[in-house]
Length: 429
Image 1 (cartoon, rainbow, N blue to C red):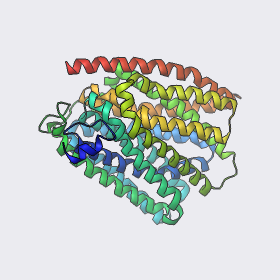
Image 2 (cartoon, rainbow, N blue to C red):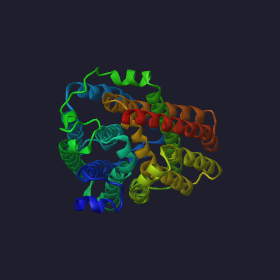
Image 3 (tube, one colour):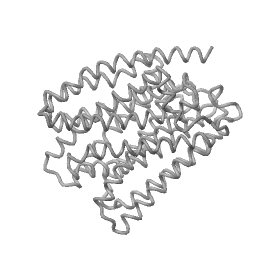
Image 4 (cartoon, rainbow, N blue to C red):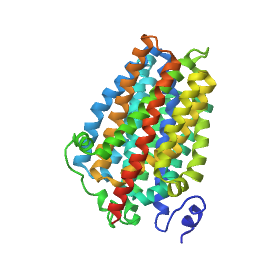
């Protein structure tokens, strides 16, 4: 047993031959979410500073951008092997950050740059993380994912913690433009991790990658729009898509409630940015502790169904509490708890669902579900909320409408867990 394996076994259930790939996976997600969380509070402040009435338009713009981005990504997947198309995605986003840096440095109108940046960062977040987890589902088998995805997800939480801390403590001293350069550099470090993982892939056993790492060299092929048809033809993928819509709709309602409550407070933009960063910081401290110490053991001992159902249950209870007491402290507690459990338990559990699908589905169908379906749910629910508000539906009424959504989400979670177990058994047999 290597020293790295012996050390890791104290905190997660790693086996021989997995330690190096596990650590590089951790580092990859660390760099990725470090890059994103440096910018997240800036996006949140820009979103609110333009006024609540602009949010539906921003959500719609993000959805439109996703509709354009997904076919472009699928075209890369069709033509290039994994070892090439994943780095290209991150190089592209890093180059975009340099463009934003140039615009801000040259004195471009902040309000106009802010609109584009809000849309861009929303696209980047979902795409970058979707590609990451697609890669993880391609590298690790279902059984490995249940043991190790919690620890890997902790890498992202550690990166988010670092990004939140830097932005909360040093945003004014560093400046927005220089934060963009830091984010770009972190994306390039993520590319380095991808290269190391492709070289280590053959050590992970009989997953999608062959003993010689051949999956990194092979093109997936198919059509650029194949992700849509793959989802429509598979009840299992449609179930994951519905799960994503439940998450998206409830997150949008919660986001609007947060924006409404926070914007009603007397705060200048700098204080709002600092407050969002402080919430992120608290959430990420809780998340990383749960991921390292609880998640892997929870999924291997209690089961995937329970892990998938935790966030729906918290969502139902949280909206009931918010309907009774719509205060800034309640929204902060609800949002913080939900996000912590989502990142610590729900997200790793959800990604295990993709370990038992075909390689084409792991990249094309997954990118469609994680981006277009998610942001489509955002846009549709944003406009629905605007319409309901115009009709006089109060915040308490909107919160109560989410209770049956949470109930359906719990039932769907158990269905998906059963189907995943069936597929895993067939794959192992």
